[in-house]
Image (cartoon, rainbow, N blue to C red):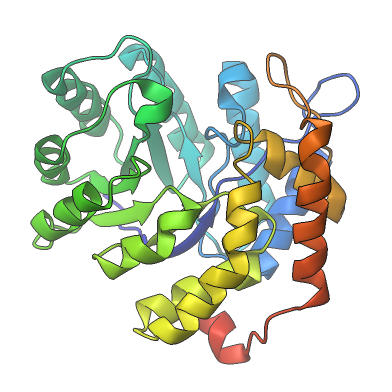
Length: 309
């Protein structure tokens, strides 16, 4: 298995659509290049933020290919999860053939498997696809929590390299980090507001929504935390806090795509059944974005290097 250093900042990329609802590959590639230039440690297309649930399998693979083509030096981790093990395996194999450096696999949603079913699901894919794979736990979307015992058991597989934690349960996240210290296994935050606390209990970074909008600040915060400079990391966390909250006033990625449009990074168009951000939230989002632009943080060359791990 090819190793992958899962530390630092990995933006969960948006998928831009044109007026006819087709994928805007040119904007997608420009966005990938913008994020790489900002110093992120990798890119994660076609996850939940990338609206993977509304893409065809062919579109899914083409997005992965387009992001890989656009960047020079950062790894691309493709979202390939599904509630159908055979479908997740097919997407994973196709992403591997496309040249992805790793895979992000959301746990099966809707059908709510037992923990033994989750283990079988992940092991089936890890046995078949020789790429580093990240188990993604987000019970608010899937209806089923991946318990610490399950995560620890999966960590023993040579191809299961990490755990994206979006349960909101810091105790559980810390337990998984604690119990996998002897494994080559990374625990990544999947919740921007908990990135700093996650690192404090043994996490190695974040797969981030906010990094689409503020990649330099996010890299500086994570880099400072990983270097043990918690005073600096806390300052940046507080600067980003209002953005973290605004990006989740409605279902992700509705707010972040609106923020992308406000910043000029891409269109806010969604594929049905998701809709544009409600007007009542737009003023608050605009105000937070304006504040961040008006008071840019002092990000030094050292900070940037710390974020580029």
